[in-house]
Image 1 (cartoon, rainbow, N blue to C red):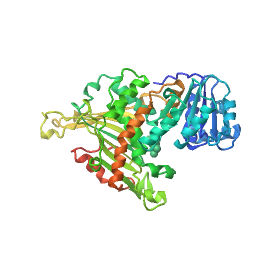
Image 2: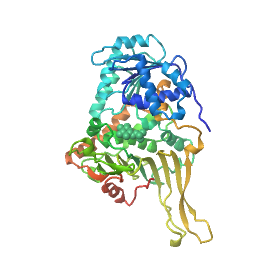
Image 3: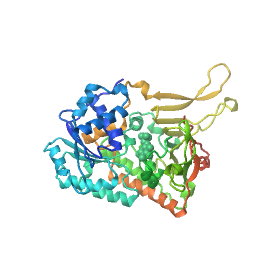
Image 4: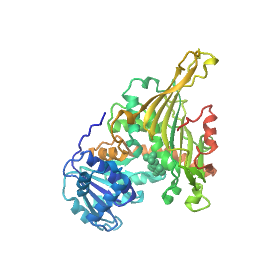
Length: 490
Ligand code: BG6
């Protein structure tokens, strides 16, 4: 089965931070793939901008190199690449003094086409750049602005950032990216729940024992020292990606896929999360930090060594138990864990159903394990439904758990698109369903802030864990205290 490509209207895509890391690794490769799938209509233009002085030709050389490095060789098509590069131009501009914005205005011209300003820059520049865009009268009815996380480092700073952008763009024009929402299986979670009659009647506290959400990485700090040490895993992963996943699992069926309908339902979940106060935090949250060990096949340094200091209390791992105080979910814990330098790279959601009420098979048949639905986001995207069956053969009634396995790659031909491809096309279409609304971001911070305060007040230490393991032993204790275990991912 192949997917159908629906072309988008012509657009101008202006990348602030056009020569930066995100543009190189994600945006230009994503746009190139969309070119290859013939999703653009003419005339579509891509304008890079940043403080670096660069000619159009130099920007094209930068883009060619980015695509060659970040797109698999089998997808490089010379003709498509040349067509793509011909769309590119470059204007140096500096938001701090406004230099270059007149030239940018000239380059855009008075085109009535859709205009997307993508801010692939540090959040501290969001306000300043959006002011300059507005000042230079670049905002049209057909304009949108796209911003990346982190939107703030707590509720107060998130509000400030949202106010700054909101002074220049209407909420319907602001696209706050959470790239997890662009992942194929994350969207499939909505399809699984709301396009099938099978699961929804069971999707509640009467039938579900608990939910686990794991986002495990094998990478360490990489070269993000300045950002990461000030953020930590709770701000970097839980406030956004993991809470968004939790929302998609827990939300009520929206009346339609209309952006505000979906976001209204997610917001209700965020507002129903039970606050973790100072007393609760040590019992229901675990902070960890990796020490030297082995990961992804080689010896790796500990976090502090990578950082180049001896001391840091920043967490590179978080496990926590969240509770949703509403009719559907009361009493069903959601266990979340995420970390760097863990045993394997895997992101998955496990829905564990309640045990059967009575076992008719007796001890000799073996254990009857509860059913589990495992939604694998990456790698090897797919869904597994674990069920009990009889072990084949004449040896009497022995029971065994097997997965009914649906690996998406086997059902669909071709490449699985990167999240950015889908999200950028949604920006052009003006579809905000997979983007976070202001109130969602703020509600997520409102839940995270008390945990951050509790950690700071109690000076809760990040517990060491050896790189290449599943985090500190306290994470295992967190779930085992409740008589449950983490699903073993491989
Ligand atoms: C980013 C975080 O948002 O997501 C990174 O800042 C993390 O720390 C990354 O590595 C994980 O994304 P993915 O798509 O590789 O799972």
